[in-house]
Image (tube, protein in one colour):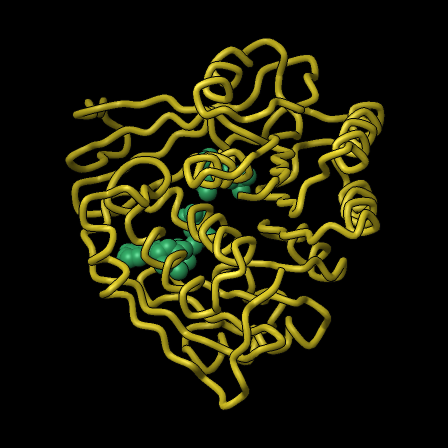
Length: 323
Ligand SMILES: Nc1ncnc2c1ncn2[C@@H]1O[C@H](COP(=O)(O)OP(=O)(O)OP(=O)(O)O)[C@@H](O)[C@H]1O
Ligand SMILES: O=P(O)(O)OC[C@@]1(O)O[C@H](CO)[C@@H](O)[C@@H]1O
């Protein structure tokens, strides 16, 4: 099993409510509520740890409410390299209705300054130059207030310079900056990538063209996801489309993070591309059936994998996928 460093610059406590139907402007009484240490990189770390990898988590945490994170990291066996900064980590509300609609209310997060960023870079340097350095680094989620795009680029350049494959999953202007940094892997969804692509990506050919452009720009693993319509993957060995199995989607919040973790799991284990993509797609479909990340130990996980459709989109030779 591999060592992975998962960085969440703007983590969150996710407050997930299940509601029959959300009524705006009224008192809503959810049927259940759950508070969990989260944020995209933390979610990726959860999945990888459950799959048996050795995972270190880092980023910025508010020192005033870090107890639920410390507890979750202990329970999951995650090594905690988060930099504590004054203040409270944000709380993001996830309102899931019976019909499958999910409303996310994501707070801005705690302000970060240049000293905090330098402390983080020093912390990450220590991880990267340790006797057992990570075999992959993931940076996932939005940027906290005070962390400029220049600061983000500086961080990405620094991580890239270590030579460890870097995967980035973010949105908005930070996504464009990440693409320019040429990480090893990237997985925007079709809406997040539309701005960079200069077009709506509402068809498979449009998403394939965008994924090819991403790959040609120097990104080894270009992935574009589109919810239930599946995901496109372009790398040096070829191009694939995966269609997830049909499931009842009750909470899609962690689907993308589960997918990224599933891809890394396959690549780090040097599984072939089809097996890698099938596993990641089935695991992310598993995730949308409930609150939280996907569970590869679900009783019907084999069946979910069997009902995941993988299509090769080109004629090039398939070899083992590498990170
Ligand atoms: N309704 C669904 N049914 C089956 N699988 C789904 C569904 N929604 C998402 N998935 C799976 O999850 C993967 C990622 O989903 P999506 O494209 O919504 O990513 P995302 O927008 O990054 O997710 P997130 O909500 O975590 O930010 C998809 O490629 C698919 O495999
Ligand atoms: O505001 P960001 O950083 O873009 O997204 C944060 C977030 O919505 O992403 C995860 C799901 O992917 C949640 O755990 C978390 O609340």
